[in-house]
Length: 111
Image: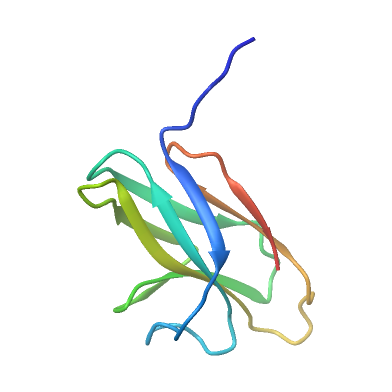
């Protein structure tokens, strides 16, 4: 049996507290925490949403739709607000999105 360990881990939890100033008030919001090697640069991606939906990775200063380049801190941790926004009333109400990062197992999120 072969066991492969990911060098990077993703943890997605519901967002608690006030939204970041860049986030949409209509979004479904999560706190995305990334753990990995200290000061590693990685690419976060959101995939699989149908037309009429937008996913974004938000910080205090910007929201980046569908992808975001992150550098982990000196302890190997990074956090962003991950949000999904239904932008078209005719889009499905319930969707699934896959969140990926360089070197990590993807996370599937049902919204």
